[in-house]
Image 1 (cartoon, rainbow, N blue to C red):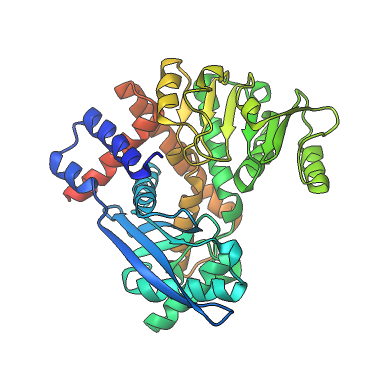
Image 2 (tube, rainbow, N blue to C red):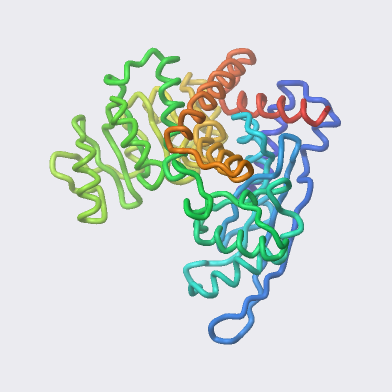
Length: 407
């Protein structure tokens, strides 16, 4: 099994070598600032008490308060949260927002809990970590299997414990509870800005640019819709059951068919493809927006796309990355491509701290120049060092973090 933290440290080593990183800063960046491990006793509906294990890794706060989601998953581990908090540091610094890297999680299958048990678990977690979080210290958010409702319970519990209101302690809240407009589509919208910049670099005209999107959840579904509205030619899309391909794909019909049948497959006038086959279609831009490790050493030679935009976390393995670089296929890495979500989370924090509420138009008017600038900085770094875009993003991010650490 791949150890996520070891992978993260390999990426750090790669960037450090290219940029001749100061050895003292390198030594500090190899460790998380602090990792909290907590036991959370929860009274179950049956009356028995079950004890759950929770984590919070606070990796580095040179850029600003630690920032990162809390996941509820049966596979959560200390190495996973450390790796994810390191990547959050990189992601925040890549798009240059004033936030550091954090991540948390609880080992649990939330589907097995009642709503009452879920609430007691969420409040219990905050009771254990509240001294270490706050809008000026560490700002959690939703992640795998956590929701705006769970964030609401956590904020409420935190405010009870500190005895005053602090709406910016947690982002990803429901809008009536201080959440930001545009949060639902922010990750996809940020990805669209990146695709548009990439198309300019590759000299692609939107109406002639064929795009395949793997996954149509919150990110892939919105991304396909927005790209289609921007004039891009979406020729393939998939869900967890499989995908469809057609040179004349009618996206409205696709979404209606999925709504009616629970799957995109078997839509009239389209060809069914597997999720694996979708990756190998002859398109200009491939958008993996589903699961990690989709493009790997065994299928990378069959990839025909001219460029890849990673909207999922880690859909291209390190071995495949190397091969794609040799084939001159640019891969816009997840830490840049899907950073629209954390950027709008940062905007939510800013709105809460200033007691403001921005419209969706205002949110996206602030998001676009940040994503465009980040893309161009990473592209320039790639050209300067002749490296893959992922390595370039790490170099750019670590330059920023190192400069703050020196101060």
